[in-house]
Length: 298
Length: 272
Image 1: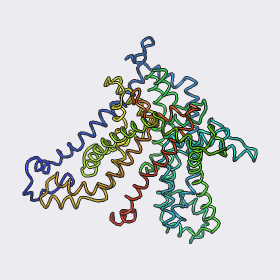
Image 2: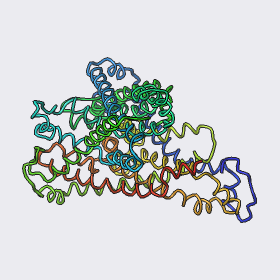
Image 3: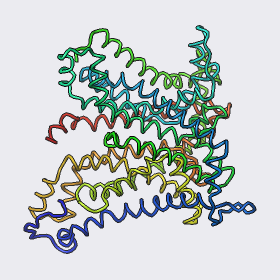
Image 4: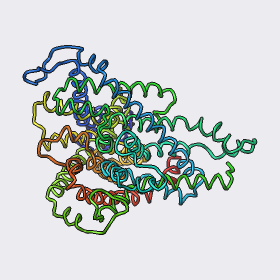
């Protein structure tokens, strides 16, 4: 049923149905009208308006948004020390979380795809997918419980002289890594599934040891899938502000700055300007990884 | 690749450790809901059912569940209709701007929630000029739920191809009859899977919700967040968390059932 369907005999089609059958373009227009209205009018207009609002200002007396074109918000966001340090901290956390997730995901994905038998493989996929359904808040909350001063983590490490990291940046990194781990495992697993076993066999037949095979055959083929996974952990971390407010103590990430500007400060233009930072970072990141073909692995 | 036994063992152990890290925190939450300690002390000092009783009587939590279900059902219904329409358009027709439309569907979920959140907040309040309410929340949720239905239906349409539909047209069936008797039955389980995902996504969403729910509209995630830092309420929040973990098993079970008859191997064979 492409646009160029051959018009066969249509004896019993009448009225609207016959008209639609003859006119593929009209059918297409009817299919697209409602969703495009919704996404275009609601979402695109909203996004565009947000971008424009970043160049407006707030009346300091009434608190209303005023249409005064200005670059002040952008300048504030780029130069104020609080924005700079929070931006750097957020990028640092996002990179660290991404690195941790990739390191954790590689062995488990390799085991699932290349070592486990079919039944164990299916069970492992379910085991990895299941936490995705558990509530985000419950998972963040679970780490708040585990990392509490008297919690499981302290109980485990205190006998060997350690102590719980408490609520702060390390707890935030742990929690975010935990939250996004399944999103990183799945694309890497799917990527490994696509690496043919025959290549691995050929490599070892040619005398390569397993580690050499992993380095010279598997990782180069897997690269786009790893990047695809990293896009999830990186961009999800950049926009997050709930996890850090649950386990991060008083620390702030970019999302918190946006949130305070909309909420308590009621300064939407400044919030919009602050929101441009994560958008810009993600755009740069996506542009950087586009050449790897990672976007087809999402 | 011929891995030595020890290499396989190391991989198996690492896999086990990662899975343990994934499941132990959730298990701790479950056990703590029966613990007499209000500060998550480990090991639990004693056993009690008090928190479960208090949670069962917590009107706030019960109301929040009702609100969440209502919002999720409405958002799922909207996204089922819009997602099906748009995937039919993208999969069955060639047209200018197809990639842009594709991007448009993915964008609400690809951008950080906080950006979608403040964009819609700004849209509702200053552009449309309405007060935030249950309605604005449903519109916001439906916007990012479309993609789950879209993905599932698109994959199904790609797999089923157009032969049956063409046969239906050749036999004289009209556009509606063909959709009702040929296309829709083929889509049914994909719609169920996509709808489940949409429901779960909406039920769990918190960031966009924060910015688009009217005052007094409290979904379950918002309720949890509001009560998380109240020492007195913490054990009740814990019980609600356990209930959420248990409830989340239901859609997985259904999804597993759905995946049964068309397991991946079978679908690959059909695609060839």
